[in-house]
Image (cartoon, rainbow, N blue to C red):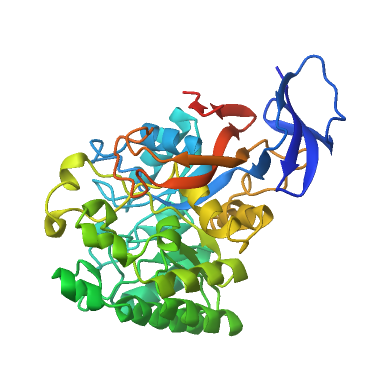
Length: 430
């Protein structure tokens, strides 16, 4: 049966009807103008229609940590959040540093069928920062890996980073750097500031991120390759990125929803759900990150969805794992932080959460215009809703969501992936 979406607001700009047959959009016309007696009709009056969201930074944990997440549960969480494509990070067990492992993850995603799962390959063998992984083999595999990252660890060796940047040029690949100087952050627990001193927690200085970003921007300019900065978190990083963009260096960057919304003040509770890498920063950093995202200095929002089982997050702060879940709340956090504050429009949201991430990931089927003869990958949002987050009402296996009990604006109500509802009226269609 075909699907007829009636009178939805296309990126918040104009009302349209959208007719979907099989996996394609076959017609887009002014609101309330398409009639099709054979179609299943959905009234989208008052709702925003966006291209399906694309996440460049998701931890699905499988293989090896299926107690925290699986490709199936992570895909369901993604569908609930409005995503139609996610990039799965390499820090699995075994590490995704060979063609065999990335193909395993890719095939699991295809089998589940709720979103497209694109594996990210490790830069170094075992994420150990010693020898380059099988970059070419992963690029030539069925998973067609184009982004490589040791996320969770920094490629701190300058020679190794240069070699990686040079190597991926052969197949137009991207090195995504987790910017963290390991010596400057040894045993670090939260942002280095007056507050960290008061709380007795080892500080994590902003310069530990900024020094690596600056080095890698210069290396990228030197070898003429592609660099992506994971989870930018400081005002200083923004300034380096601004300089790099002015110099036309081929660098892109992401910011997480939590770094747009939460600050180091939340760490005062010693609640480890606020423990994340990089750490929550200051209000000044938040304001600079928001401005940079609105201006395009930071290119995309990426969730860094990092599920953990309860026992890994409910101990003492110092012994608890770093990381937060984020797929199911990402759109709402961005809407609250950026749209409600008038810093961005819904068209801008489509750019930073769908179009630009798809471009960086070199995805031909995502981030596309909502137009005739395009694949029907859509995210449909109610912008009028205010809702309280319940971390335990989740499709993920883990509930370490830092927005628990907070009220957010806007909510995804439908997700359509390749012409089929993967979430309908808030219910994931497994």
